[in-house]
Image 1 (tube, rainbow, N blue to C red):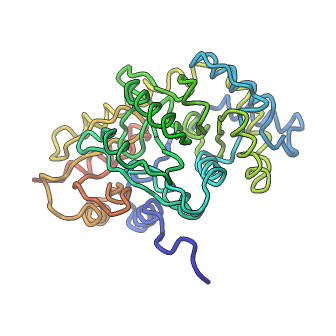
Image 2: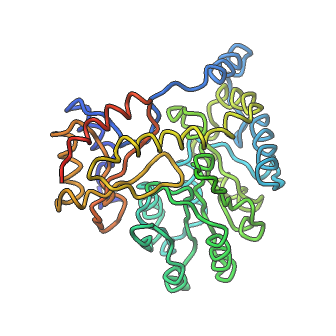
Image 3: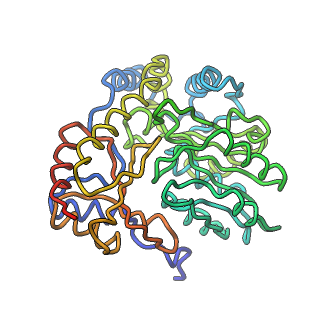
Length: 380
């Protein structure tokens, strides 16, 4: 059989997690919380099951959940979204991204992405017959080189993908960034896919420059979100895509013949729980404390932080410790120091290596302390 993804191997997250399990290492590689989710949300889902919410939900998502999301968007961004036509509930954010690519890409279409990039983007584009056009964020601050974006536009360019807050670097797009993005998208009649799954995990009093705040940009956009990131339930695999009616109509054509609908009681439970605004309004401070705590624990190590303003990841340079490739260094951290991280080169198509590793700080205090104790053994 001829592979549709001949150059794709096992995910780095799987590799490092398996290595961590084999050696009994602390896992700060894969991004998931190791602390409990809200008992109140669990009870909401439990009650939904008791009340009979156990059959197929509407293909576009439970109406109660879509209504709650539209109200939240109005509250946060002052933007009116039609819950009937513009919101589709999906089995996770990654699924929503794949469906958006499948909706718009024709063979040979070019899609601009920024690297380092979340690992699903490239295979999603490739399997749909698209051509990936990677543009490297400028190291070490991982800023977007807008001049290079403009230069990369060709008659075959179909879309641009942005991710803010950014995984893996934790950078956040500014208002000025979005204005430049909007100018390029509108002038070249492009689509935009905006990965905003970490919308509430943003720090240092920085605002989230959601595409939903920019009407001209929103007209051409698919915007992707994740309940798992917001409510500490990554294993539930629930997310959603917001897009204007004409784009949602095409998105839903793909969606209905793939998964059709998502887990009903979880949708109903989340819809009820969303009346608790504090659960997401306090999330930034909650995770910023964890980021800052890990920084403090590592301040006397040779690792140098590359500051994160969002997501639940922060990157660290080990350039003063070793000249080894980041992959070798990350493997050594597992086998010799008992901690799993992710080498940043895994997020580049060409394996660009700046001697940087990514750590996940979405962990209990005790986990962060144990991880730091491993890393404090590092010497220059």
